Image 1 (spheres, one colour):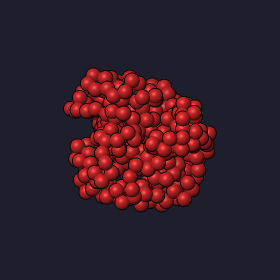
Image 2: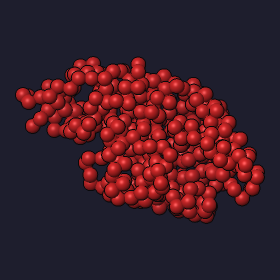
Image 3: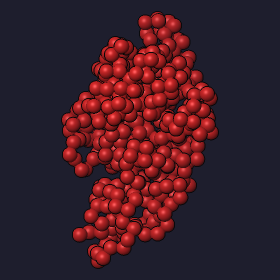
Image 4: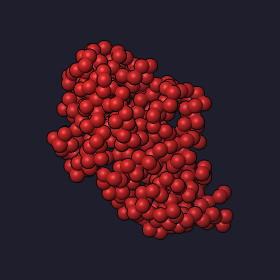
Amino acid sequence: MMAYELTGPILADEEPTVGKAWVVGGRVTYERPRHTDITRIDGWVIPGLVDMHCHLSVGPSGPVDGDLVVKQAFTERDAGVLMVRDTGSASSLDVLDGRSDVPKVYRSGRFIARPKRYLKGYAVEIEPDELPAEAARQARASGSWVKIIADWIDRDLGAQADLAPLWSAQQLADAVKAAQAEGGRVTAHTFATESLDALLDARLDCIEHGTGMTDSHMERAAASGTPVVPTLLQIANFASFAAQASERFPVFAERMQRMYERRHEHVTRMWEAGVTLLTGTDAGTSIAHGDLAREASEMARCMPAADVVAGATWKARRFLGGPVLDEGDPADLVVLSGDPRELIGVLMAPTLVMLDGLPVV
């Protein structure tokens, strides 16, 4: 049986483990094996990257299924992303079931939205009073996460159209309670300030984007331990959204432009407030799959690189309940040419990606 010797520091917590580790039978051990056939691997070792906001069933032209879902999973894997939280699917991910050559996927079922209040063809569209029952249904279907669209542009307001909540505070509270009763966890898409008090009151488990968070919301999220996934690559698109909407929806356009201009400052304020920040790309549509390293570089403009690496590896894995290279854990790891806390750019070019103890790149 082939074994591998990991000679570099292992960064799977606040401080690296200095000393050797081995991969035997697809798992990590810190006890020297008796094998004589050992391949040495040099470099900094991190747990496989985690994309906390990814859509494997969405591509540049819209929903995809079948082999294209697998292809996009391979793209993530080859970039070192070995764990994915799929935050809303537009089609089935069953094609990934039973495969050992793709990242571990935590599913969120279908997006949940109201009719005409989200991207056409992506979501289960329901009336507001149906939200709790649908949240429970999606929790059962995914066995993991539920994704609620908390706010979107309300075009019925004409020239005054702007971001607006889709649900009442009571509907959100009942939906979170219903999903959690089924063993699910709830995350919400939110750009708008107006949705956030109700979401935090409902005690949901995570916030996506969070571009409308005020200092008060940040303090509440920090105190409750509710993480935020800022998706800076997606927020960089807000300028183009504003330009496209400026003639028909000037109020909405002005808000999107403002959030675009302050995006880095806003994430810095979250970090200074003590909010747990996890790394996710919003891959699918306009964001390419396999771009987590670029997202990490954007986040490193707002906060220390060490905290970015934590939010993209061991901290995200522990939040999801996944392994982090402890004794006996699956050898899902990435080897780098240097310390990513000092140079975040090394995430762009891993020297080795190993999934279940097998090198894939």
